Length: 362
Image (cartoon, rainbow, N blue to C red; front, side, top):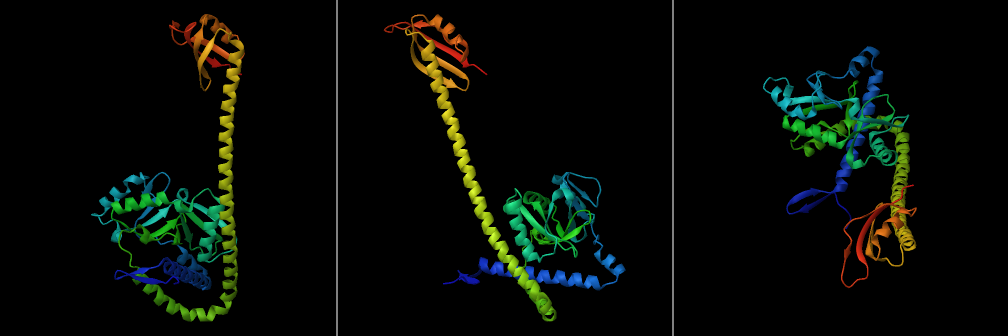
């Protein structure tokens, strides 16, 4: 059987991932049209009215998060770990209207990247941003949040912020029992319209059905407008579909290239390990050959230990003291000395010795 949008499981309706993806795609498409319609309406307005309309809304208190910490409305910078306690202290005084604040991320808290000199629909820009992060940055998609803003005349630009930064802000807002009314970027306070929402900072259960119903009603209202602009948007839809296919192919090639690179790196690591072991083996052979050459026939070795540049030999010899001079005279060894006293062991010819020395540097 094929995948269905919903299935019954123990008396509960469960939404499948395919249905969630369809709803998300539908929401992004509606947002694309709304932003296009808004930009067209702004272009038709007089210049003075456009300036007032584009001015950021600054009602209510705002929390500005920077690399050094946070501040209220640009006041003294404080550690981010104290934000929750500060918000709680503001509750009784009523400084936080309706328990909500405006969240502003400073320039040091996010990274802005440009994909194209032309604008792209948000749904297409999001896929292009994921591919850009995968191929052009050292970040992992699971470690960052992708954010899109609503600049009417901007290039195809997106911003990324580390997920651990967002999680820390969420924790402090939860400690302060504070909601977020809007999310803005930089000193210009450009509003984030996709990728990160105020609801993401709330512990309240999301009313997904009600939200979807509101979107559906809005879509019915906008459907009449879509009829008049269908011919204009037809070419844009075809171009977007072609771009989606190219991005899909590029995504496959990027994953294949990353897989080959990982396999290559693994092979190089194995070769380096093999070379290291081969070098260690060669050092042992050279040391053994040199000892066989410089030690007299009356010396009998029972053990050879090598630890980095330090060596230690154990054995029996009729003249153990003469072995120190033989080892010191070798161009490969230095600093020879007895590690323990020379002793006589019954049943063995010669005295038992334990000598340590080092490999000659150079």
